[in-house]
Amino acid sequence: MKIPDRKVIFGLGLAFLLWCFVFLSNFLVSFWYRVTASSLILTVYAYSNVGAPKTITTKEIVVGVVSGLLLYGLFLFGFTVFKPFLEADANNVYVFRSELPMIIPAILLLITGFCEEYFWRSYIQSNFTNLFGKTGILYTSILYALIHISTFNLGLVAAAFIAGLVWGVLYDQLDSFWIVVFSHIVWTELIFVFLPLL
Image 1: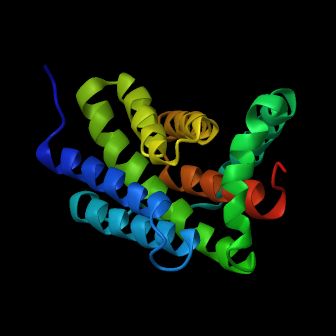
Image 2: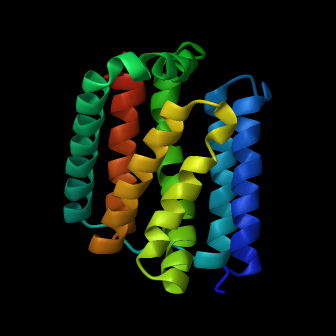
């Protein structure tokens, strides 16, 4: 049976512990500071195993922005259709919007979008697809969703799975770290700051 190497398993364990810290503690005053600090730790860990990303192109920025807009549109449509089932979970997520003036999360989301994609796509997914082929995309998306399980918010876990799967497929098909970074940033900025679903 194929299993990831110890460094990857340790990185996943670290991600799970850090996300428990993000959602279950009050350390660093705000969720936004905790998630940014945790994302930076994961990036440092991944960098020691992956190295620096390639240089960015204008095309990657454009494709990333468009894909982020489309993903937001998909979530908006899904939320509109299933609002009675998702509204309570969304309210539990949006409680974090009141912790700080929204300019601070808007800035921090630029950092976390980069960091999360660097860890999850450049490091974890790359290792998983080398080991398991295309199924590695699915495994990565499931794990990306499961690190949110400490919230006990099934809507958030499902959202993380869907977004992670979209970014995983984009990363695999277009072979571009920067596309998924800009997609992630645009999606989070819209859904959390500029055009929240509630």
